[in-house]
Structure formats: C-alpha cells, structure tokens
Image (cartoon, rainbow, N blue to C red):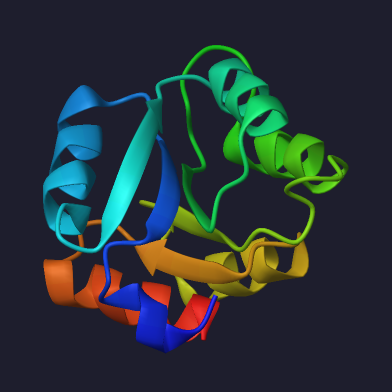
Length: 129
C-alpha cells in the first residue's frame, strides 16, 4: 500500500490486543485513516485473517492465555491471503534488543508501548511505504 492512500481512510487494519482499552485507543487513533477490526486473542486474529485481507496488522506480543504474538505472526505468514501483509509488533518489550529480535522473527515494524498517536502514524508510514 502506498503512502498516498494512507490519508484516504482506505487502510484495513486488524488490531490484536487482549486489552480492551488498548484496542479502543488504537481504534480512536486510526479512525480517520483506516477501518479497523479487533481481535482480543491470537486464535481470533488467526481466524479473522483466514477470512479477510488486511493492509496492516497491529499485533501485541503478550496476549494472555493462548497464542502469543509471535505464534500469531507465524500462523498469519503461512496464509496465502495475508502472507505479505505488514505486521507491526506493538509491545511493552521496548529495548533495542527486543526490537531486533521481533524484526528477526518476521515482524515488519516495531512500536513500543506506551506510544503517542504521532508515533503510531510514523510507524505505520515507515512500514507500509
């Protein structure tokens, strides 16, 4: 997806986080630039990606019970319809070492929590352009 499309509210984004407040915040931040789907578990995220194509996935690493973010990423990347979909790790694991590890595991971007709306938009622009 080209950066020009980014401002046209045409992005389809899947937000994956087990914290409802985090999901609400991301939905508010993205309201003018994207339509969002929410998944509170890794299993729900994998099921949604089997049914839909997304322009971007914002994926928390620590999802509570069930699959973690790395496992979700691995499941998504083997699906034909989303194997090239950019996935940003949105996580409280915020060191440079953590960033390097997540990028090495196949994430396309990294956004440490807490973040501002501008930091989110910058991470998205860097990842999808």
